[in-house]
Amino acid sequence: MKNKEKILFNLLVFLASLCLLFAFIKQNLVFSLLALTAALGAQYFYRKWHPKKYYSYKDVIKNKENSNVKEK
Image (cartoon, rainbow, N blue to C red; front, side, top):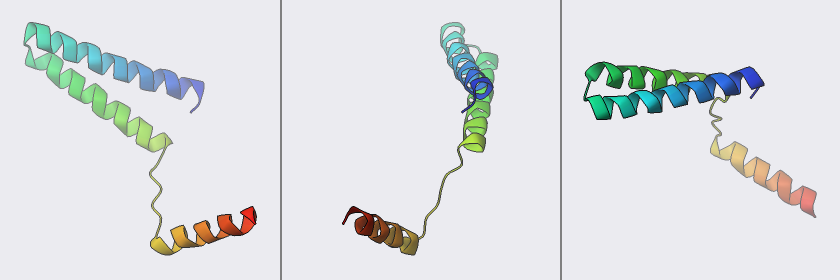
């Protein structure tokens, strides 16, 4: 991740945890909703920058065979 991306991600996670703490102390629904929104935003940006990689079974076997050939 780039520096700006790290700062934004960490800021959103910190904001979510802080809002969740306030929601627990004050027992206020608004802080709970803010925490949920910040957590979803952090997850969205994390998945945008680091997408999941899906592999088929054939790709996994082929990669494993290629790595075994390189080691020999």
